[in-house]
Image 1 (cartoon, protein in one colour):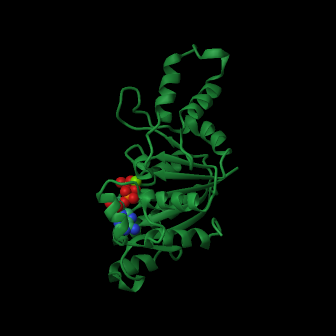
Image 2 (tube, rainbow, N blue to C red):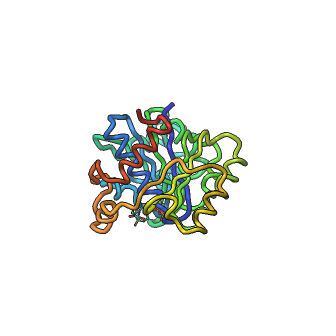
Image 3 (cartoon, rainbow, N blue to C red):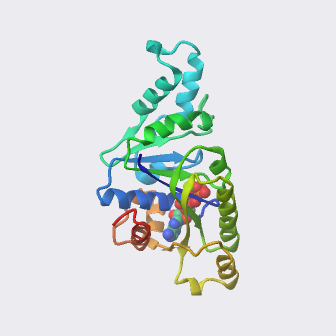
Length: 256
Ligand SMILES: Nc1ncnc2c1ncn2[C@@H]1O[C@H](COP(=O)(O)OP(=O)(O)OP(=O)(O)O)[C@@H](O)[C@H]1O
Ligand SMILES: [Mg+2]
């Protein structure tokens, strides 16, 4: 079974950016095979990674449902789904990519949910690392009730409200009883050091259940790529955000 890494946090705090910097670090360190999962129905992880968007798991399930009993070759529905998901993976030389679902498109509105968790957990056994980009908020964490996550990065930007959300996500994780093996607080888009943050933000950070694992700096190079619509995986490996993510992965022994 591979190591599963996932991100959580309020909207717009940098989840997708950090997920893609994690992916780039794993690729650059020769870690493979990798599976990236876009589990945010409004997300654009494929764009950030510079790859084509595959047919989503939600769509595949919808197709299978429409077939009713007419599943080819006498396959069970689960086998058929496994097969279809495998066949529709977007594969690049560095990684495989899976999209869970999107609201647009006829028949494609269903976000993949619990029905699919077995299919997904079977698929993820084939990889060394699985990286999941999640939607904002935390409902999804409790909804996908059997997914095991080895490292959950709970991300916040420097705003006090966003930091407070971290506390709530921590609470939720406690209630989930052990499915999330390690959770880490990550502060993103930080200019300067913790001491440079506004007092209200610092107070919220001090009230958190643990100290932040990493501070990902505000990175002009990342912003420039974003503005030009370029994939974040094109970021130079001396970029400060990329380097901070590398150190973060080393600190928890995901990378050496
Ligand atoms: N380290 C950073 N330095 C500067 N800008 C950043 C950094 N990380 C993320 N951003 C910018 O912040 C914005 C939000 O980032 P991102 O899309 O990664 O957040 P998100 O949490 O995935 O958002 P959503 O909840 O909408 O999925 C983007 O414009 C991104 O370029
Ligand atoms: Mg996102």
